[in-house]
Amino acid sequence: MDGKKTVFSAIKPTGTPTIGNYLGALRGWQTMQDEYRCIYSVADLHSTTIYIAPAELRKNTLELLSLLLAVGIDPEKSVLFVQSHVPAHAELTWLLNCNTQFGEARRMTQFKDKSAKHPDNVNVGLFDYPVLMAADILLYQADCVPVGKDQMQHLELARTIAERFNNKYSPTFVVPEGIMPATGAKICSLSDPSAKMSKSDDNENGYILMTDDADTIRRKFKRAVTDSGSEIRAGADKPGITNLLTIYAAFCGITLGKAEADCAGMGYAEFKMRVADAVIAGLAPVQKRFAEYMNNKDYLESVMRNGAETAARMAVRTLEKVYRKMGFVRLQHNRG
Ligand code: TRP
Image (tube, rainbow, N blue to C red; front, top):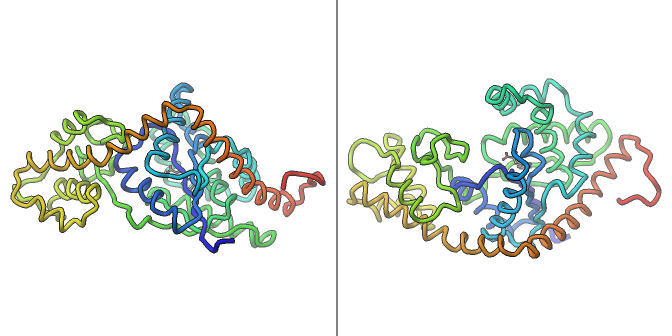
């Protein structure tokens, strides 16, 4: 093959991504496309472990696909597909379930956190989520998985499952490494700079959605929490200003030091509007392309179809190996 390493990553269609998702993950996905063979998925099967209204799931899936295209995920370069269009994900999950210990899955902190948060719906899917995630990654023999801190424990479990299977049967899976995209930046809530920016924040002033319009963006930055003192500089004693400087630097493509220099001497109000304007300008071309893709359902359909075909072809190869190694009788002219 071309000697490039394979990257797999996925994002759940649970709502519009924030600029935190953009700067921390999606922009990195875009830049990795030249160096790696990239496979990116809209993880719709993962989105139903917490109840989501059917109409919302449908809408979110097409929006997220459009947004991935809008940030520059190029379906000619990368494999871009919707997870539920490739049945191998659900099939491998079952086979891996039988190679995952209950105790291992029970230790996952996200399972514990989410079951505490939704005590009325602690479903088996929520428990099994990390095994589905392992199947996503292992099906494509991914070398590298760009993930944030919150998914590291799940990636560790995927590695454990892969190693166990390889030892129990015979070498089958590439054991994936977690990587942080070079351009990754951690963005905090505008209303509480000690917390990560999240679209599930109860306070909508805490996050900027990638589809927020200019007025909304200005309004939210106007309300952003700052720190005592009046200096514009980064530092542990200035979490609010540091977060705003980080956002500004990331959107302008400059270092934090350069951002500090650019904004030194401004008052807080003026500084906030400078940051807002940089975000508005940075998102404008993405939002324009997003609207175009959303209006072109035929194109979206063709991207989904081609992506699913390519992904399924790759995935079935691994899946067939797993079935055979475990002793399942396969039909002679089967898919793989
Ligand atoms: N669980 C991931 C998240 O919540 C999304 C995801 C699903 C994923 N499958 C994956 C990420 C495989 C990396 C690799 O962010």
